[in-house]
Length: 491
Image (cartoon, rainbow, N blue to C red; front, side, top):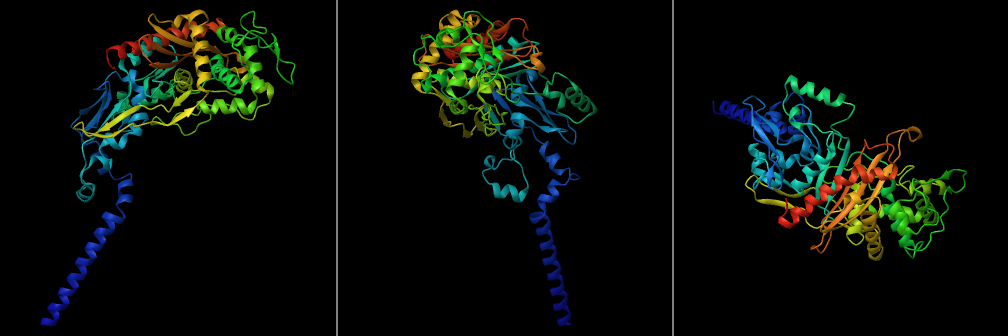
């Protein structure tokens, strides 16, 4: 009898071991496959079973969570959704996440290990921490000024702090309300379809995800390259530039929007944006020199993240001399995001140094305890400090008595550059109006803001001056907002 009991006990022990092994196999080794199975709703239920952490601007949340009391309990809400959509993106139960909601999802959803003081215990209990918060670098006043300035026109604004790389404004219009995509009902599906059908692409972040021909604003890069290479030594000396200028190796003649550009000095040519002067300068600097300077500013960089990816701004490195001449005035294959052109202006204002831009100041627990901070950012020298000093003078002249007078601010030193970029088949499209600039209050030791503005629906017949007429007033409003905030504390 004892033998049978012993056999039964051993059999039961084997069954228990098999049960434990099978449970371990399912819960440990196959947990990932079960978690990722589309039929498993437990992950989604847990994900939306608690409020999502918030994205903060100026210390105030621009996001929230609404209790629906349904199985997927909490839906994302947005304060001033269209204003901040190019930063927050959306967090949708049906369509996932985008932009900052996507890049910072682990913190906001509460799944990041940094949020847990005992991560191994959380793994064992399958519990979830409250979502953390993401504090942005945005300046509320600057963001609002950029959004109001663009109004109902298609375009974008990027503003950064030159000395740190902090992004102060990031606006794209037309915009949309990301709250319309938050839930999982039929209305969300209709909103998604409507937004994706819209020919104006309101969900496209034009400030960082769309590249444009930068037009004459790229002449900042060309002038810096010419000064660094020693092609230009005296800002006021004649440049030996014919008008019109025949592109090297071709019979194509390049002309100017304004008269009197022949042999004009760099100072005057920059002020009045003479295409012939800068096309010849680019050809004289050469492909290697122009490429090196453009890439030092950030062109051709595929790794830039703020923390979501930024589209690559391009300067073609395989051009012949004629194509190089056109590239040097911001045409041909040269393309740039508004954020990239804000980096160009910031480098001029910051002694030639390019600070990597960033959007997240710090990440915190729900209690407000800081988890991470932005810390120091990589620095790249785009031009010699002496070149940057001369470029500041050139940009100041544009605002004082050139094409950018609409950007002038009483009580501040402002430098700028206008641009009108041709595009479309045979340059048939309405030109893009550009303005890049920086501003320093008269009581400030350094520039507080650098801005790039592009307006897609500028007036087609205003040539180079449309950058000053359509884009410069928007830049001025953004710079005024930042300078006002810096006097009274950060916004």
